[in-house]
Length: 87
Image (cartoon, rainbow, N blue to C red; front, side, top):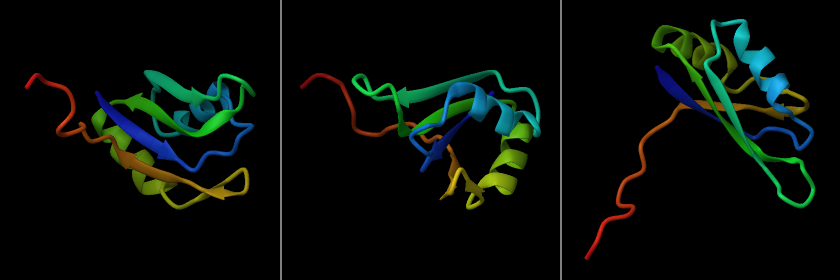
């Protein structure tokens, strides 16, 4: 399974919206949207889990496309480097 980073989402975007958008490329295993605690709006990005070949198809089709008036950024999630650990 692969995870995609989806950036530049509109504030009114909900989990069902993202799931529906990516479902046309395969089975969506999970969606995590960063939500603002106070307003309840989307903070502009989400993580979407899908199978590898479905992930590649979704990235190719959706990266740079307009969704709710904003150009989406869809890329494969990369592990963070240099975080954590003891000194």
